[in-house]
Amino acid sequence: MTGAMITLVRLPSRNGFSGWRMASLAAAMVFMGAVMIWRLVSLQVLDPELYVEHGESQRIRTADLAAQRGSILDRDGEELAVSSGRPSIWADPRLTSQADPANIAAQIVSVTGGDLDQLTRRLSNEEAKFAWMARQLDDETAARVLALELPGIYDIEEQARLTPSGGNVARGILGRTDIDGKGLSGLEAQYHEVLTGEDGKVVVERGLASGGSRAVTIPDGKYELIAPEPGDSLVLTIDRTVQFEVENLLEQTVAESGAKSGTVVVSRTATGEILAMSTVARTENGIIQVSGENKAVTWVVEPGSISKPIAIGALLEEGLITPQTTVEVTDKLDLYDVSFEDSVHTGQSVMTTGDVLKNSSNVGVALLVDRLESDRFHDYLVDFGLGSPTALNFPGESAGILHPKDEWSGVSKPFAAIGYGYAATPLQMLRAYNVFANDGVLVEPHVVMGVQSADGDFDIASPRDGRRVVSQETARQVTSLLAGVVAEGGTGVLASVPGYQIAGKTGTARIAQPGGGYLDENGEVHLLTSFAGYLPAGNPELSIIVMIEEPEGDASGGRVAAPLFGEISNFALQHFRIPPAEAVLDR
Image (cartoon, rainbow, N blue to C red; front, top):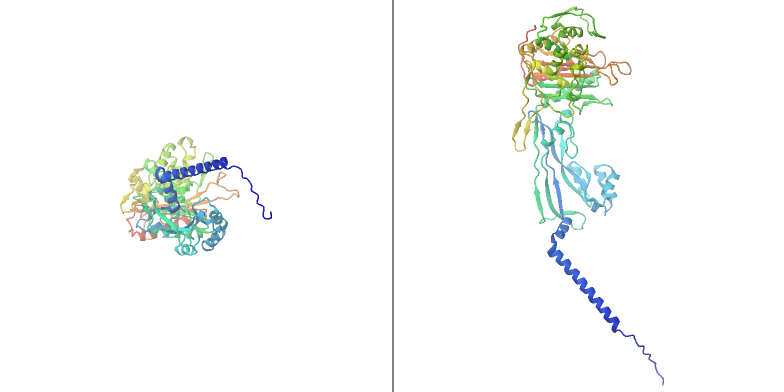
């Protein structure tokens, strides 16, 4: 039989295998169903907030709103330091790292400048959520960056610290802040807590714009705003106009004299209000500019001859001399192993107390102070505020150096009487002079008039009460003697102002060297020239101290510091419209 042959193949039995397979499949389906039910219960019943939060974290953005830092104003409300909003550019590296970080960084740097490699590293850090690109830009520059429409690049407003009166005006007083608004020096640091407000925040819901290139705020999304509270403002005793003029005149003097630096303080005699306080210094490159260091309170120097009125005041107060007391002055006075000499020889052998001050005689002062016990003279130095800081509490302020009584040697007293053997800041010396200007009462200097809140409330700072150091009679006797120093024939005649009588004293001191002694490694002497005084002498309203460090040539306090004192005095008298006063008696 012809035809196709069909072979039948008998398959093994499927009963056992098919049952096992079906059972496994059913078990898997039951397990997967249980997992899905558990996940559904977990999402909707047990822990729904966790997943809501996770979803929101992808959309919700919280940004801190920096509080505006309080302003610093002069006595007339003129702005010395203010904060103003400035745009800054930041990035979300989670987005930029997925794009082209190097290209994004290059485009930003082409507009703002900066370190290309650094920005590229920041943009490439996919673990970070935030990175600064450029901070506190002007509006035009920030707009140019945003116009690039780079992925993951945004802007935020920050508060930048500005000085409307000029970057250097009152620089040493105001101090500075870092880019985050933290006070680093000066009043910015001292009153940081007062000036700093309370930050706020804004919460917004964001999504991707069409095309997905950048994030945008969802119009009807979540939004919350906690407004920041601005800080309080400081109102200073400083007069901006006087401060500006002092700095200009001081720069001229430092330049013309070839000096290393100069420091000036101007104050209201009766109240201790500081009207101007500045240091001008010559940089290593020879540039003369206002210094960021307030050397009026940080610079500790042996004051030299401007300290002589303190010794004379102590002797008058103790009744050991009168203005007419005479001493026989020689060219040189040997005490122990030290010789006292006068830099200017007048030819006079007999001098009154007034002559001793008028001619700034070292020998004469040493002879007069010999009448006062060392311990008692030390007490007077302490009473005049030497060896202790002022009430200013300025950052970095020095207390000066006044060794204890038991460390004084036989020549410590005459040395201290002519301004050596102890050290003081310029402001300490001005405080001491104010004792005579205020009829014997020490008044602490201050630079903050009060604090003004954002809503306009003004709290006046309460200066310390003055304390008496010498009698009114002694103070007026010293004032009369100091008026003679600025009169014709005195060492301070170049400090005079036409129509006004000035009480003041010149000073020329050697500057101690780091290695000890007064000679540098080349055997040269470095000088500090100064002038301290107050005016009008008959009714003092202004007190001024001038210190010039290391002027070149034949320099002295009478030739370098006194003329600057006169120029500042003349300007301030006109600015404050202070009339002449009746002349003090030249006793």
